Image 1 (spheres, rainbow, N blue to C red):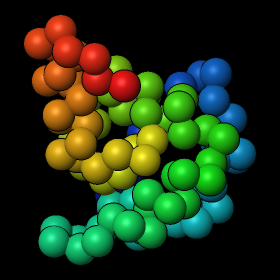
Image 2 (image 1 turned 45 degrees about the vertical axis):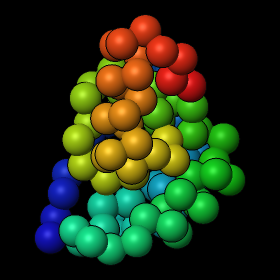
Image 3 (image 1 turned 90 degrees about the vertical axis):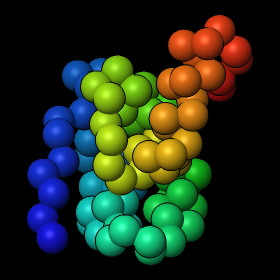
Image 4 (image 1 turned 120 degrees about the vertical axis):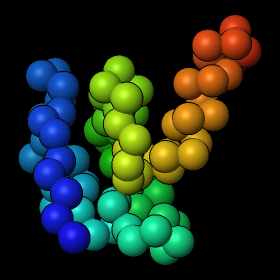
Length: 87
């Protein structure tokens, strides 16, 4: 399955991101597959905060962005919307 990855924020340098050097398969796994490897890669990436910010600002609904899965980003958005600390 091919998923087009949107452009990162202007302040980010995509060539520095570890995902750009790894490939989308880890970050857009098949439903029910583990995201453990993607999160491990994100955890080592200096672009992680910018990536997460981009995903939240653009309501990315699929894949691992900034070290968070779809469900984790949804819970973070809901917590922020409800006034609870999310990050």
